[in-house]
Image (cartoon, rainbow over all chains, first blue to last red):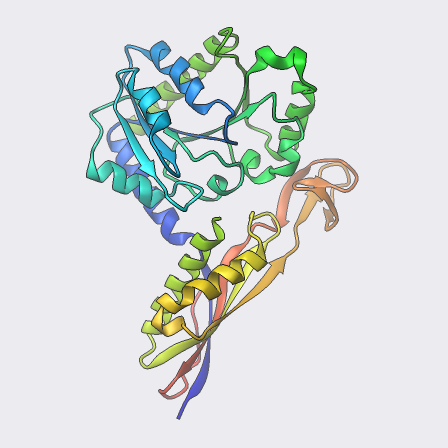
Length: 225
Length: 124
């Protein structure tokens, strides 16, 4: 005889990822490692910003996790900087998740570093849903993409700690208003920090580096308490 | 896209819940998806149906999606508004200072077919 049973519950569908992200965060804190998750559309300049950032952070040590669906092109660019780089090829997946990060670091642990930059798969949609255990989420938006992107992709901008406008040297040639874009973002996110950068002309890099260094100092103070 | 990951998670949860009921199989999984969770219901159902064969207890199950409309509190009007201009902006153009609903991503019910005696219970 068969019975039909209803079980009522509230179970977070991404609960398993959240738990693993919390474990990742705990491991990062034990190592006094500040972890930054870089997210953006493809081609917004994540790898280029890392190439410009890491030399400026010396002598602080940096590690990188590079997420791409296929290949190691960006990882190879970053290895030239002389920092440890771990490549995660996601295959069919359009985002990194906490398990991928945990597996990568477990399989091949990074040497002790001060910063870990996770360059997520280029995508303004899916990465927003998956916590990796990072301390800060940074979204890059290129001025060539359009200042309406925060309206079209609100979730990723709502849940980030900083927005870096990239390729600002191209502003004279595109119809992009930084002020308008910031206004869109501030409607979603009252606390995000903004940086206007160009790795070609070095504009805005000092402020960006200062934020990273201040964030790391504050992080170390927090975990020491 | 990531609907496949979400579907996998749903199936894993349903499978494990069914495993806790001896001799049971999953008939239906009910989920709430908020408007602002970047998840397309049609794609999610497609992924669910494509993947459920890998989960023995869920192989004949159905996914039921309850879409949750976004409701937020308008900064200008100081009241909850169901008609939002876009994510986190009221139709009057002002921002929202809180979102009451619209970000749900949860399973709220499973229906099992079991060969054991009926045992209704709730877990939260």
